[in-house]
Image (cartoon, rainbow over all chains, first blue to last red):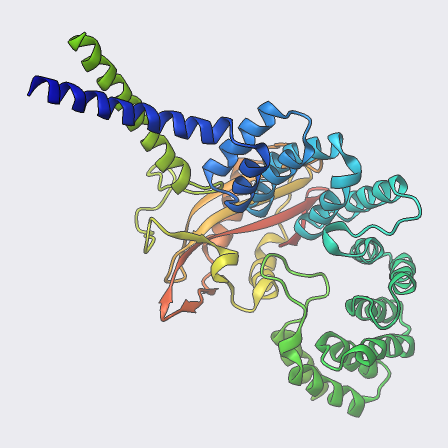
Length: 266
Length: 165
């Protein structure tokens, strides 16, 4: 009986030690790519952050680790921590991370001037190459920055560059919408309408274009055309540009359309 | 020998227990979680499921009529607020499954995105404006509504709030 208990104790001890060693092995010694993928796919949880911290300790010059670790902080509004990590990623590999940092500054902070600086720095590092920060054309994003600053002429230049780079038929459709809004803001209402129509040539359901046209026609005193376009805005509203994470600079709302209709009927 | 084995069993057991508790905490806690703090939070505010407070983007919680509606309801109050510096004030809080808000926490950074401190009284005033908002929209999923974390960032430029997003 004594021997039985002794063996049982040894077995349990072995199990506890084995469990501890396995956990430590998984955290510290499995291939770094495997740990990185696990941490990346469980974004935000403390374990993911701990794995990134271990990886940083073991690979202090790997910029991707700093970048990935920054993501949940910036997504959840802790910009001091998020940017401390993201700035380190940019310092280590500017070509790889400048675009994302600019994108975050533009979309999450509306820091148009500093986003512009990041996009310009990236562009200067990659001559003869059109960058696509976070999957969006760099000139479209620079156009948005200039639009945010209300520098509409410069915004038009960048949006036009985007069209030349990507072609009229496949460029991001909102490029035309922004061009239309810029022309509208500059008081060029006819030109604005023709830019909004370019979006509709690519796809007929662009409510931002119809809304922009309704506003431009109203400015021109063509109220019937304005009414037609505001109804089309409502009809195609389900296709509006939106994103669950952030509000876009040119985002339209049903309440705006209702108010505009009331204005038209006055 | 017997004592050594007992000691080894005890130590290995304690390490395994500690590791399990640590792992449990690591798996169940997330960046940006806000636990109830009786010093800071109103006891009248209740979450519906303490173990499952989602991110706003996972359950699509928002303000009625989105950021436009939110700005409209906030703007008159915040327009007159002035600060001594520039930067960003971000409030993170919980929208419970009934569309009520609570557990407010604030993070502030300067224009260089480094930690910065704004006037505490003004931050309190700003928070009270958010607390007064009532049109929070919690989406139904399979006839259930969920608690979620939400954040609002105020951009302060030359002492004035210039944008909310």
